[in-house]
Length: 404
Image 1 (tube, rainbow, N blue to C red):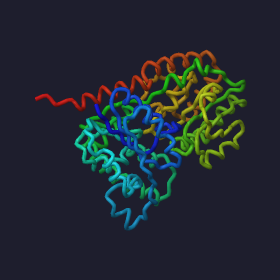
Image 2: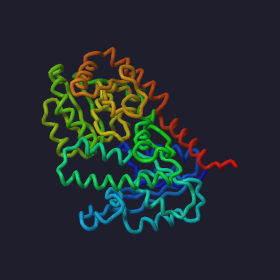
Image 3: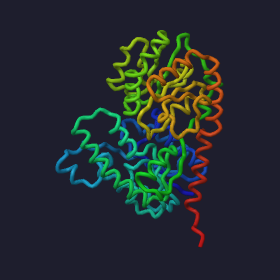
Image 4: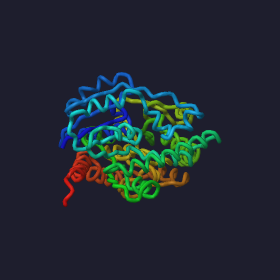
């Protein structure tokens, strides 16, 4: 098949969870099909990534992009039918550039990432069916933000206005798309309940590069002190919220049980609220690193204290692949067939979360059992080659002629 892939960013270097998903799926689709790739380039230096994508794509275009300022409430925002979180991706010239890139190409399918690109992809002259890959479901994500974040009255009203418009756009897109690809069954359940019960939805969880996150290259080498890792983008709201929740409600119990505990917080762009956590005894905010694998080696386990879902959960598959046990909230591990006590530990109440961390730090045999079972489950079900083959096979069914 001949595929057009449209991305709202250049997913390289692969240093964010969403980048892992879209980069690896592009590469896996290109192993089986002819792929053209069009990306909005909203960061400096992205041109250096062109050779990376030209290794597996037939044609590549990075279109320079800058987000417009957030609009004033009146009249611009209130009179705009599209949600502000979508118009924030609107820029003159993008549609013409995308149309020109696709002109004259007989695509079998257009694969694009996230709802923010739907206005552009919908307007493409190409007749090929459209499929949206959701790195997260925007409506679910923003509803959970509204429920969990402390917001003033003005911000709450603005978010509700955006949600109302977002719901309308989600429903219109669901009716027009040939398929929506989501990260887990929780996303599918939400979309069928809140958007369109009959929408064609394909669940494709996130995965891991088993050669990169490999225990033979980076075998576990835990620090002498009991060390807990948190790994993720440190300017991403669910991660910032999860860390805040953990240190406000669960860490005191762990410190009481293990006064020698150390916590390493690794990820790009730590916001001030995250940097301030470094003042807590035993906590080090490492920030961005060139390679996360040595930190997985050093850690006794990784914690995933997320309360806002709709994300990628890549930190769990990476952690288990490289042999680092995991303690997560249920929402942090949604969409992955991982069982509490067999592949990882799951806990939601603050006291239970702290107790699960303390249990694993105290029980080396349990850590070894979870390490072995969790890694086996990930390698059997959540590697990018396996997931890419599943997506490719599904796409082939979408473009087959309908029988009479």
